[in-house]
Structures are given as C-alpha cells and as structure tokens.
Image (tube, rainbow, N blue to C red; front, side, top):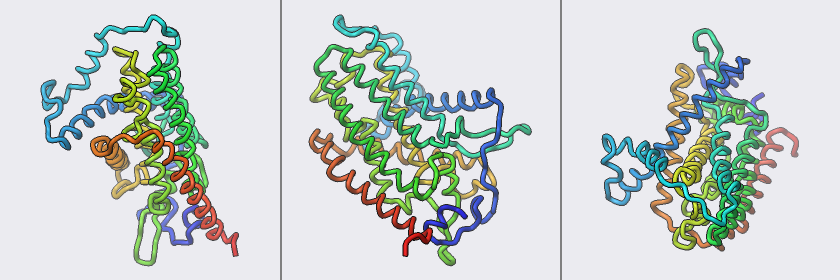
Length: 373
C-alpha cells in the first residue's frame, strides 16, 4: 500500500503514477562508465546554469529597478557571464603577507566542490531507454540521499570559516564567525523541517520521495497531486526560509554584509579565487531549488510526463526557475536583517514551529495507520 494512502486514508489511483497507470521507474543497473557520463553531463549543466544564473539575477533586478542590465556583451548581454569569467582569469591574484597561505588557497575550493557534489543525488527523472540501454537520470541513488544533501550543505561553511581565518583580517574573521553561527542555527531548522516529509514518504532516498509524489490522491470525483507542499505547507515555508539563510542570500546575507564588514569573509580574495566563493553561492542556490522542487513540488511530476520523459525535465526546470526567481525577488525587495533578528527568527520562531509540525505529522501518520484509538 502506498505510504500516502496509509497516512491519509484517501483513495489512490495506481502506485505507478496517474490514471495512465505507468509503472514507477526503478533504478536500473548500469555500467560505471555510463554513470560517470551521466554525472559529467549533470555537472556541466550545473556549471553553465550557475554562470547564467548571474545574468538572470542581473536582468531580473534590472527589470525590477527600471534599468537595462547587461546589454553590450553579445545579443542582449547574453555573453556577459563568459566575459566575466575571462576577466576574473586575467586579474591579479593577491595573497596578504600575513595570511596562512595554504589554507587561504584551499578554502575557496571547499565551498565550490561541496556545492557541486550535491547534484549527485538529485534525480532528474527515473530510468529511460537509450539505444536499448537502460540509463538512470541520476548519478547516485543513496538510501540516505536527503541526509547527504544536508551534510554537504553544512560542510560548505568550512570554506567560509577557513577563508576568513586564513585572511588575517579582523573584518573577514567577523564575517566567518557570523557564518558559523548562522549555519549552525538554520541547518538545525532546515533538517527538522524535512522530518514531516520523511514521515509521510517513509524513506530518505531523494528519488523515492519524488516517486511517492507521482501518486494521485482522489477525493471522490476530485483528483489532486500528492505533492508534499499540500500536506506539509508549514514545513515548506520553514524550509524555504532556512534554505535562504543557509545559502547566505538576502535578507540573511550577514556573513558578507558589505556596509558593515567591507565585503565580509572574502574581503582579501581577488581574481578567480574570489569567484569560487561567488559562484559557489549560485550553485548552492540551484541545488537548494532542485531540492525544494523534488521534495515539495513532485520534481519531474506534471501533466504529460507519462508519455514523454523529457517533459518531466521541463517541469523540473520550470519549478527550479520559480524558486530562483523568488531568490532574486527577495534580494530586490527586503533589506538585510539585523544579527539579533536573524538569530531570533531561527530559535524563537522557526524551531518551535518545526517541532510542532513534526508532532502533528507524526500523530496524523499514527492515526492513518490505525495505531491510535
């Protein structure tokens, strides 16, 4: 019996999907070289998406502020990310005389690499057949994939802390200390906000959580998608707030508060080494948006995906773009919080709400399983 029906008691139209009744795609055994190719494709798509996310943000902010944004490099500024990359490669790489040079060089790679690695467990679909070969549209299907994503998201803050320490700059160190406290606070909230989803799905595998949501719920003549945003709306809002804080984005960008810290933890970084911090932030935005789309909005689930698997990727892309636009919208709209407000929101508001959501979800799950009354 599907987990969704056991927890809610609603009718379900086929464990494999919608009324079309196609079977759920299970992970197929595939050669290691094919897995490497899939992972290589996903990594490069992520890197290109990261580069053009910078252009997307500048264009959206320009539209909201009634200006043009990049227009000169390529048609309508479309080649601006490439020009920015070439410029960063050509700039002088400076290292402060008092810096811990080995740590200073290594720290930016931590945040960049940990951000990229997280794409390995994001499913872009199930299993498809290409020239008679079964191909998984994911690099890895870990039974604790959700914990893998959360863990590597936490590791990224070490790149900020180490870079701040190694810079031998007091303002950078202040930014690093803020980052440590902020990530510890909001990672707890972020992880706990997903417990309700795990209770309903009965698994920590990101792919299986996505597949659970392809089961339609039937209320008499009414059929609704089993997306967890409908059954876990409070968890979704808390996750969104905590994810924005975890990625150090406005209005929670205290570690790099330019007006207070002269650019914060990366003050002493320049050239391409600085870009690892800058671009790692954008990669994390894309990963968090993918994570939210898969966990709460059904991932690749959407009309027409039973017939055309490529349409599932289009649906996933549309959901991710919604979250990325929301990131930019917040930056254009809200001022930065004070530090006491930042910590107060985490510990006084979000944490109690998260614990309440876990208790309510667990009770409903027990009632649905007939273990209460």
